[in-house]
Image (cartoon, rainbow, N blue to C red; front, top):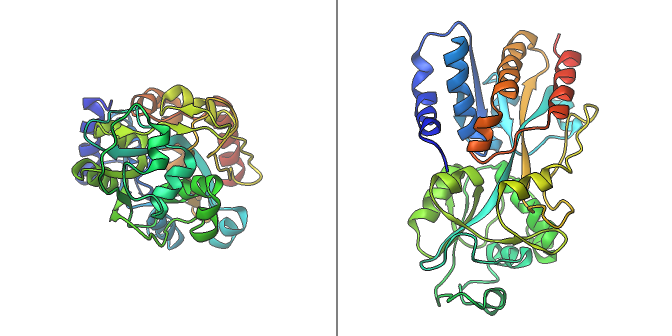
Length: 334
């Protein structure tokens, strides 16, 4: 559950932009990690007087703005491969690990009781399964009273790293999805309604009876939404819990040589939650002084922000990964 302090940080992160600060850096991008970045920025301002102004506009917007050098750093849940980074003259490193949950709003069905296999999730978002009492859903939930109601799919309307990771998971779970939709920050959805940012999708699910959508876990907690039980890559039912997120995250294998490129969905293991994702920071190679200010903020967050990450439902990077990132900074920012 989000704490009151985290909610205050969310508001304050927007309002402190007019305050005096000895250093100010501007970033924009992914909504996936935004609650945590606001919390980190709030504490960084309090401890150092330095301001980090972050705008949650989606990963697609973050990539565009840093590519055009509109902001000091971009944030994206979709990692860029080394070729794209080279073309855009960008550096990249992970900041935190999060998870995507399949949230739903069905009266009488509570959190962590609805089971949806990964292929059923894909069929719902593809528009193949359209009612809550479809035989494929009933077969996995014989103890639940599923209503004869149309499923309202809620998806992102903007370019989204959350969508990229979610569709990566769907493509790995369903031949139909892979062949007809594929993986991307934006998808040609056949059904449903769109919301901007994780915030928009969470609000629509909360307000729309019989809806289902995909959101970062922090937004599920903040809005007191219910999440489905999914299946691991090994075929075991698994709940959206910190322990199961960590079980998947431990398989992350980043290297400095490929700029930490990695996809974390559908990791092996009987308890590995299937939709775990890292979120990344993008820096312009030609701006070492500004980059030093950005990395000073993330170094502060790496040292002091683990507890905030945990409270907000994220997984902090392992210390060995943080050490590797600091080595990457030292080698590339001079």
